[in-house]
Image (cartoon, rainbow, N blue to C red; front, side, top):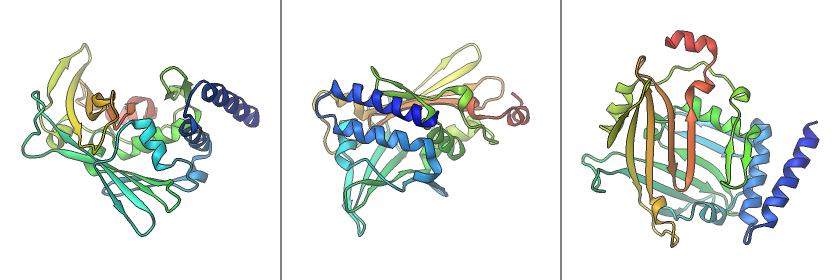
Amino acid sequence: MKTFTRILRWLLAFTLLSTMTGCLYWLHAYQTYLQMDEFDRYFSVVSKDDFTVHFKKPKLFSEDFVSLAKLHASSEEQTADGKRWRYWFRKIDKDGKQVAPEVSFYLDLAFNKEDKITDWTFSNLFLQIAPPEFLEASFRSLGGAEINEEKKQLKAKADQLEKIAALLPKKSQVVKQLGEPLEITQEEKQEVYLYHFRLEAKEIEEGYEDRALSEVRLMFDKETAEMVKMSGRFAGLKISINYRDYQDDKDKTVAGL
């Protein structure tokens, strides 16, 4: 059954790729997606002060990432093993000016000498909006995710997500790290905090200038003051995590949900 499913996915990829020009990067992205089915075979995770996903048998090249994101890194440096790119995101106010004192986070991409991505690192501040336990679970869930051909997105089914025993961060913790939001929207059962971060990009492809702006929305439960969902776009990558989908029933009881 699993082999049959993989064949169907390859057929889907061929159909999708045959309608595109310059589509080699989509093939490499799809090959990486297939590896997610056997996460521990192809990836490993290290979580300390930051969070790193290691690619054991990488498929994506640096040019693939630029083609997908339409953005270039803030800085690039050569390393003994290849090179490292850093994408800096700095918090801005309603006028588009950088706030002081500075609030910022970064995403690092490490490439080997074959120019293939080997490590993807999220800095500590990013983990305030995507706690490491939930970030890892979201990566693992991509193996069974549905492909939206039109939007080029992956969506994991809630009933197939790996359940974890981890408590959600409180609003007071998050605001202490990120500062006051740009805007607060009141909904029936939750508050939505909006933050703006600007990517410090060396170069942006024409027509994709809006991707330098990262709108981050954090949803907090009014009753428990816990962060229950995060959505945002980072260097062209859209991320949306409903944290409650990953919590097991026992953990929800402890959290008072």
